[in-house]
Structure formats: structure tokens, C-alpha cells
Amino acid sequence: MKPEDVLAKVFGVPAREIDDRTSNRTLPAWDSLGHMTLIVELESTYAVSFSAEETLRMNDLGTIKRVLRERGATW
Amino acid sequence: MVDVKDTAARVVQVGDEHAPALAEFYTAAWGQAVTADGVRRTRATTAAANLVTPGETPPTFLFLLGDRAVGHLGTIPVKFATRGGADAGAHWLKGLWVLPEQQNGPVGFLVLREATRQVGLAMALVVELAARRLFRAHGFSDLGPLPNDLKLLRPERVLRRIDLGAVGLGRFPSWLWASARVVQWPPLAFLGGIKIRFATGLWTFLRGRGARVELGDAFPARAELDRLFDRMRPAIEATVVRDGAYLAHRYGGRREREYLPVPLWVRGELTAFAIVRRPSGAGDPRLRGIRVAVVSELLYPPAEPKLGLAILAATERRASEIGADAILVSASHHAVRPLLRRRGFLPLPGNVHFMVRVPAGGPALPTQFDRFWLTRGDSEADEAF
Image 1 (cartoon, chains in turn blue, brown):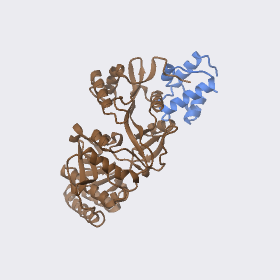
Image 2 (cartoon, each protein chain N blue to C red):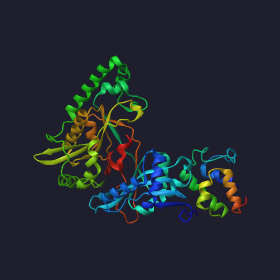
Image 3 (cartoon, each protein chain N blue to C red):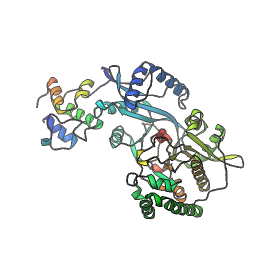
Image 4 (cartoon, helix red, strand yellow):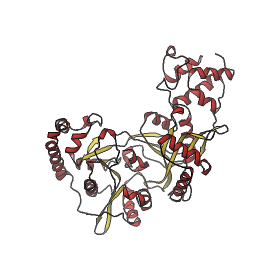
């Protein structure tokens, strides 16, 4: 599953409307609770574990992809 | 899974060593000119006044990035009473805030998670939908909004100034709505006000007269307040313990300048008590300078509606004496609601939701909001009006 699809599933928006600039400032459903739901979903999907600093930085899809690659995740 | 404790980003329960970070956060978040020494002094004061665990500072939680606080949650300790049960320690959670650059991230979630792990029985009065979702995710039940009821004491002045649409006046009775639209034209404001005064006065005379009592103006002794609360509590399923110690701590001392005590006496016995908060200088911008007094606290035995009517009448009188244009009551209990109608109060939409979380082994609480005795002064929610 691509990260775009994870975001689409968590926030209930079509994947085609999501790109690397999609962020917690552009999606109304991406609030504090939505962020934690997304983190848990990403950890489960890619079998990785994020540090606190990483979760703080992962506020847009571009950064999420970068952190996932650093963790060795593929999609 | 994310763990925030062993890194530079972490949630901490505040100790004196975090006073500089807390002071900086208050300034950044709320524009308060606070120093680290001021924070330490306040912590010492609140520890001494802690009603649940005297001498202990009420828990405050910060999300720290290095030495900088970016998220905050404070608590107010109270004793909580349930019918037939022993009083339990509880905390109002208050001041959940995240600095703008970290909003919509994990900070609010993690600060609240740490707080719920530490405090046991927890309650909050919450407005924003996003915050309510966050509380629900941590096991809080949303029991609904605290009802608001307003009575116009100077209707002509209120009608001339108020933004009718913005305050939801469309929910008022049609005769009042129609009158209001016409009399907002200044020359007619006086006549419209008289009409409303007459209608409200007649209604109150016919339906809302209370018991014969003596109205005082001094803060009663703690023992008198204890006796009054002891008379109330058998009829209430769940409430903050509103005894003399609590009321004196919450509204007495230096706070008496903004809070007016309204005691009612019958043959030397305190039979009902209320606290009226003076209209704030700034207030809600939608009110356009209208002065609204708030009933922060209301105590009377729920089985005695005549006393309830009398204490409501006394709060209206006291509010008029201090120049209020209107008076607001926010009260949850089912016994109070019909009395407000009988006194000519009009319902406004509620927006402050009561959230409660009972830990494993905690007291059994009612699931219906109107079984709780809550008023606007709880969790210091009267500051927001």
C-alpha cells in the first residue's frame, strides 16, 4: 500500500486528491487525533516504529515518505 | 509505537525545575507576562490550597522540545460526591493548548494521554469539536453541552445593541424575536423594552414567586455552607463537593471583588446560596458592550423549588444592583431547568460540553447529564464568558 493510500484511508479523502504537499494544514480532518491515527496506521502498514521527533516532523506526505525511506520501508 | 519519554521530545509532569519553560509557554500561548519566580510562587500557593491532597501541587503537564514547552495541560483538584458513595478525589482538566507551529500534530494527544494516566477520575468542559474528539479517544464520555439560560434585566439596552443572529436569538419565542427586530431601531428601543419588561414581570409574578427569605450580602461562615451542602447532597446523584472549604477557596478572599456572594437566610439558617460574577469589562464581542452577569454557583436543596425560585430572584436582584443588562445561568440539573423557565429565563444554545472519564475501580457515575449538579463556575468556565 502506498503512503497516499494510507492517508486516504485514515482521513477519508480520495487518494487522487493527495500529493506530497498534502499536510495537516490542508486536510481539515488531520488534527491531533488524526495525526496519531495516521502514525499508528503507518507503523502497522510498514512494520516500523517512529521516534517522537519523527512523529513531530511528519506533518506532510513528502516528509512522511522521506522518514519511511530512512526507516527502510518500501511500497 | 511512539514513546516520547526517552528523547528530547517528551511529556513531563511539571516540577519547579520546569518553571522557566512554563512561564515562557504562558507568555507565548496566552500573552501573560509571567516569570519563572511567579510560576514557582503560584505553584506553592496552589499546593497549600489543594483540597484533595493538601500540600501537593496540582499536576500540570508539558510537552517539551528540548527545554521549550510547546504543549500544556493543567488540572484543578476537587472532591467529588456521588449519592451514597464516599467522596473521591477528581481533577478538572483545563488549559489544553498547543503552540500554533505544533497544532494538528501529536502534541495534544500525548499530553492528554499522560494526564489521563496520572490523575484518575477526570472531567473537562470543552468547546472545540477537535478537542472533544481527542478527549473521547482517551476514554472520556461526552455527556453533552451545559445549557445556557439568559434573562434580560434591561431589555431596551440589550435589544438596541445585540447582534441577534450571532447569539442565536432565532431560537427564542417568536413574539420576542419580532419585538427585538423592531425595537433595535433606537427610537423604539424604549417601548420594546417596556413591552418585554412587562411580559417577563407578569410571567414571573404568576409563575416564579419564591419563598419568603432574607437576602444577605456577606460570605457565610464555612460551617453554614457545609450544612447547606449536607442538605443538598442526598438529592443529587453526582456533584463536585460544594462545601465551605471549596466555596471559600474558589470564590472568597481576593476573588470577592469579582464574585458577589448571595446568601438567603430563613430564621437565621442559611437556606440557599449563589455566587454572581460581575460582568467582565471585555466580554464577548458579539454582545457589543452589553453587561452580562453570570451565576457561577447555585446551591439550594433541589426538593425545595420555592427556595430555588427565591435564590434565582435574589441573583437577578443582585445583578441589577451592579448594573448588569442581563444575567446568564448555566446549570445542568433537572431540578433547576423548570425554575429558570418560571423566572422568565430564555434558553440559549449550549456550547461547553461536559466530558468525564472514570478510571477502573472509580465511582459509578450517572450517564445522563441532568443528574449532575454543574454550574458555570465549575472548571472556572465562567472566565470564558
